[in-house]
Image (cartoon, rainbow, N blue to C red; front, side, top):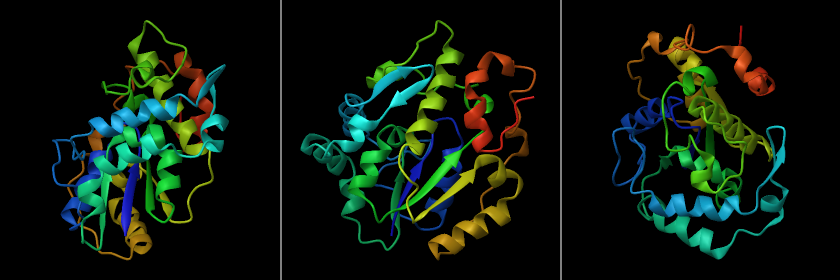
Length: 239
């Protein structure tokens, strides 16, 4: 089974990657401290190819129709296959990878791997945007968006974009949505659901409850009202 983690950077995806790694899921030949499969230059390059077919519509909305009706280019396919070569060639029954930038090309990743199992990982955006990540400025991946001089605003828009890109196609039949907060506060229940879906026993790793709601007193929700509809999707509060 091929397992693909889809989730924005600084959303706690390291937790699920560590869990899978500790459960004898092959996660790649070389992992960094965040349990990302590296080197990732080829996948970063593939993001620029995908972004050429995405248009910013205004009012914090993007049009993905150009990418969705476009056949996956051979150049994109080759870059992804080169990046994933150790994983695709692995003989392990369970194998997969975690790299947050995968989210930026998710629709075409699904085209290439429709039978994979997808773990859609989310975290409250206000906690997610407290720290910096490579995808903070979407221009770095050729994505058009309303840039701000305030980097925290740019991070928030990046969070929204990555939410929207996950919603632009129907969820795969082999998939599950997991909130970081549930993984922390209700780990046993959440992992049990994952085990049922994967048909595999999973390890338990230590989690820190103080990693939740760190945004309180640091973020003014009213400055990010354009996130509210997306936050409702995950049942995240903003008061």
